[in-house]
Length: 387
Picture 1 (tube, rainbow, N blue to C red):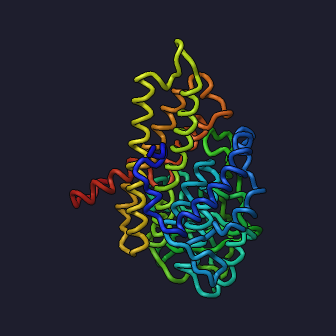
Picture 2 (cartoon, one colour; picture 1 turned 60 degrees about the vertical axis):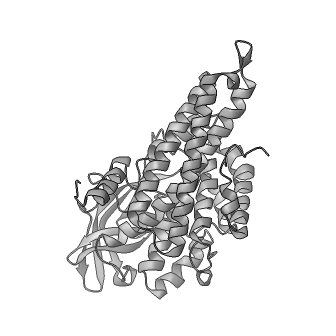
Picture 3 (cartoon, rainbow, N blue to C red; picture 1 turned 90 degrees about the horizontal axis):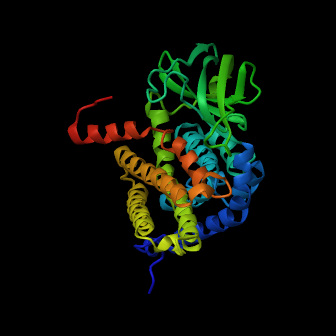
């Protein structure tokens, strides 16, 4: 019995019936709705907003949150599979779902009041309200504690000043989860589109995540009622907890991108004839293809165990760091190798490899660079903080 080329260890057999159904549903959506349009969207620098309603109808927004808030109530492995299949289409589509689910809906659920949950989560799950997450600042990058955005208490309100950078969904968003320094530590606030002094500016000239909206946010004496503050968390624990949730999804997503690249390169190498034989008949091509399959298999086993730990409530942030480091590096290396196997044809967006390679330049950087995650593991091994 032949092995499946993209699942050599039959990881799918370790999934529950519900998990397989989730994967199949999202895979069909990616094949039928994302892949046919995503190359053009990337070329045009356009996020395909027409897919949002369908994504919501499939229950992919806030999929791990409870059904009482209009969400699907799926487990962590199912959320990972959603990310994998969406990123097989494009990192920009997965980023949209990841930000909405893990960086916006999750903090409202985990740190918000019941009134905030009831107000926002059902409409966010339905795709009627889009969110963005404001943590990174122009000068800050990997050092979120060096935060300049600040909120000052003024009676029953807060007045927020500052800016955020590299914000996915920024110009799409109806609300923004904004983290700011206060006299009582870092706190989170829900800012609504149209508040006086709150503006978003889309970042242009990107060569990566072109089918995604990336923005800068600006706050000029934005007055926010205390009822819009997330009441149940203070300090960096809040935003870092959100990032752990989002990074978990990112550990799965790049596997989809790598599979898409391997699928394309494998088929192309069988069809392309050079020196009177298919490229796939050469030792050099087979060595590259075999190495890709090895690395994808390793990544699949890694995230499945990570997902089981998450669902058992024992997942640790350092484990997420290890998986993001390994799987993003795996995927970007595979995308580049596949681009090489495609030859000159590989530089056009008629093929997936160059698009995935460019997108993964962002994925390997955002929500913790490769170096940051390496240092997290170094600290775990030595007990010494080298940041």
